[in-house]
Amino acid sequence: MSILKIHARQIFDSHGNPTVEVDFGASTGIYEALELRDNDKTCYLGKGVCRAVHHINKIIASALVGKKVTVVEQEKIDKLMLDMDGTENKSKFGANAILGVSLAVCKAGAAEKGVPLYRHNADLAGNKEINLPVPAFNVINGGSHVGNYRYITSDQLADLYKDPFDQDDWAAWSKFTGSVDIQVVGDDLTVTNPKRIAKAVDDKACNCLLLKVNQIGSVTESMQAGSV
Image 1 (spheres, one colour):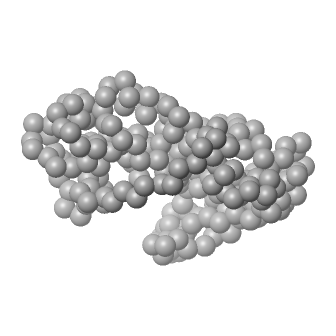
Image 2 (cartoon, one colour; image 1 turned 30 degrees about the vertical axis):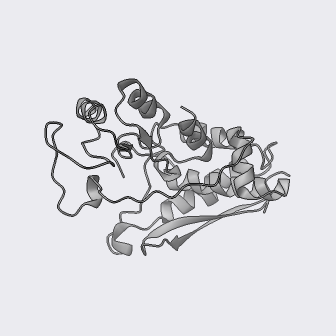
């Protein structure tokens, strides 16, 4: 089934902040892809996403509608958008614009095949077997989510397992991970970016990956990140 229509709008996420929602006609670390905001302090404290919505409705939609691609061609559609954006961190259209369309394509692809979304995602990732996810609870946290965060050196005793060090302190990550027998989760360190994940693997900087599609900005790149 070809793409017939794409329409985006500004809605509110679970935190009460504006975000992008995309309907399909077929049915923060510093290295994250750029989430494009309006920066108009008179509207939603500058967090509006009307520019990202505009990019979808006026540029991305017109480029994809009528193309000889079907909604099950996730990688091809994602590549078209990435090529149109042409930046390393998706700063032209905004990762929230590209990801909104990418996720809508994914949902439409599952509907086209008549399968649940998890089955379609497994097919895209090349996984024949499906396992029930195991819940993980974030007990001790580093990074900007900590209100009283202070930098921790690799020589200090730390009982952290998510982002215990600065995202550029690779030596500290490697030293810490090699000295403990717990899960050390890369979040701001790896930002679901295949290149940074590959470096983390080579440097043995962490032993667990937190994968978030909003960090990289497309379904295809998220799949690639999970297979490094």
